[in-house]
Image 1 (tube, rainbow, N blue to C red):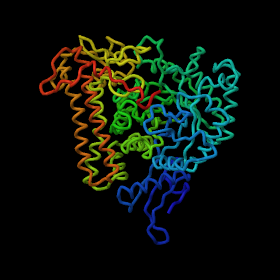
Image 2: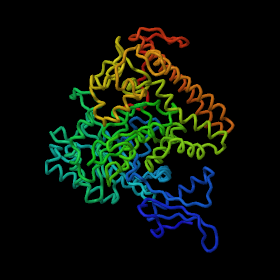
Image 3: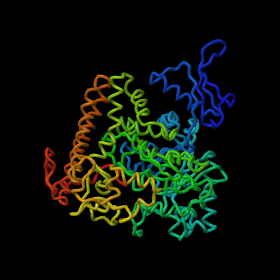
Image 4: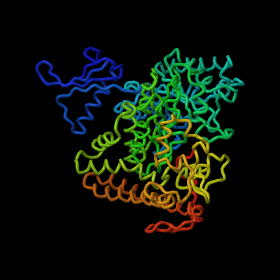
Length: 615
């Protein structure tokens, strides 16, 4: 039975927390789910269903759970023409043309799925926003979606284009200190809240990748964010201001710019502003060190932004369970208030007390029948929701729950399937960006290897900017002898990062004959890691083939085909990368490792102008 109300609830459980207890009612065994709100009870009901689905005991229950993070949102990079930037699962779920008159039944399915994970918000449109999203017709469309999502505890948010006062407001400026601009945003917020009383607020990408922002007028990020916060604040709204900023005018290492710009602004943001920070300082790469902003702004709340859609990890066809990636960054110790000041604790508002906390995930959801482009990519949506509720949750436990609910509870299936998932992201790192290399993908679409690209408009868009391969070695020197990006971390954290071989070439430029911990030279180790990644995909293929008796033929065949694609493309990554870097290393391959079957010119000649996910 379900009971809502505050009586008998543990202290501090809040409006979204719940308890599940086995008890007796009128002399009969019963299970009570209780919380202060209907939304809390709904979350508790889904928790109980998860126990049933995963065949856990449902007697003797005494469970209390509350989210450790307040704002748990998906960011949809969906455009008004239904194209999804970095989307690999079909068109946008939102049929803007038919809204508000027609509501696709899948909107309810979407809301229910998110509620089952504890996700409580969704940003409907791309961070590269169009001002049209803030016009009356599109506000009405967003209101229709909000009506559908509301019973499932999900608030809608909109990405706001900073130049909207010019584009749709007939003003000549978007200067955040201009009274007419402030009046525009106040009126726009009032208009939205009349249509959507529980509107969550705005997400903003400003002064990044050509997007307009307050710096266009000599103002700061805080000036821009606070103007919008002033508009939505009376309605209870918030502003999520992205820290993903970089510009060609900055002569320094690109990965330093966000900390350089935001740390000096600490304490100047309004209370209803939260700065949204990517997991790493570059751009959702297969592996990056944690972002130096975490813990560096004690007076400014920060929310973690991760990417569910695998822009840099093989799109929908490569199996890459991202739970271990997110666990890695959440468990990283910032040392900002001594040992144990992990990113998770920063995000939870516990390192420096924060009332506003959040976690955002760039969605991988589209119109494909399986929602995410592949069955295993659903696991990343699932893991995000679970980790946003509890950043201390373990990726393996989450993977096991997902496997049991999605495929089978048979132990003979669960153990190998979870093992395959847990090693999958590391396989991608090995065949794409081993030993701390980064941003080696081809231009624009980011499909396939392109470590040779050196002819783009901006240096920091090119792979050669990041790997810096030359006759004397490879890697980006970010120590004190180089850009000193490592100096943006607390000293203890910097020491740990420099000692971590997984980030070796992120922080150091080293000779090809440098000896790594295995005893091999750096060149030999690179080749070994590339080949290891390929072999790991082969092992995943063998594991999946052995699991055929436990999976329906249709899903098994599709995933087998995707793994075959991944194996072929992992080999391509390996061969192209080895052929290219060898032109600098000028050394033989280690014994037992095959030569690339084609010339470097062949790999460089490959072109994929219609690969999905273009920006």
